[in-house]
Figure (cartoon, protein in one colour):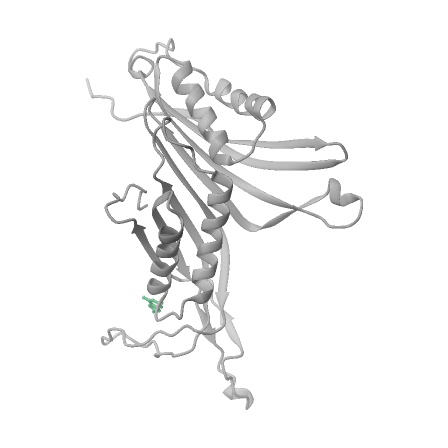
Length: 293
Ligand SMILES: O=c1[nH]c(=O)c2[nH]c(=O)[nH]c2[nH]1
């Protein structure tokens, strides 16, 4: 009989919107929560015995019930609460992984409606991934879809050239990317103080942005390292950060046919193909544990 390999199950993409009504002033949290559970699941796969299976429908209900009972503050905290509940609440479940995407809303600032009217903030998504095996925690937070652009202080020269190279060297180009960042906290057991998730996230995001803006870039690779290093240097609770940065090429348009010059003023924003620059930056002695795919 073929052997059953690694397996997990759960409810993916439970969309939960939680409104907190503070009198006339309302607050909004908007999450997409995916829970995956693993443990003693041989019988359900091999014999059709469901005795160890907490239904995925129950998993979904738990997400909604916890949103009501405990509210939602930091995504990490909500994910930790869920993971602990499944691992400590069911004997057959030994490990839980909770992934959360959080969509940010900001207030529409007109008088009166500012209390209950919101607009989605751009494409940026906050992410959290919590893994728990009953003893150790692994919390990886991050963000995707944070689009940034420098109109100068970026060059790309001195690279390898072979017979297929046509790219012109440049000492002044537009540098733009959609930041996809994941960072892993050193916190891993309940006996140690839990990081301030909201503050750590806001500060890490701020360091990514300031390093992007302040780095004189000789390549996106160099900028990536500077962004990651700044987070590691300034946030002691973070041991590892992985960045995936598409190079959103901005190509100068040839205006000569129209008798016009183009002194780094008019670009075509090419959407594909794009260079894709990826790397992990680590605290000295830390292990690279964030998956590279
Ligand atoms: O910052 C860059 N890094 C590269 O590796 C590369 N390759 C390329 O064609 N343009 C760029 N830009």
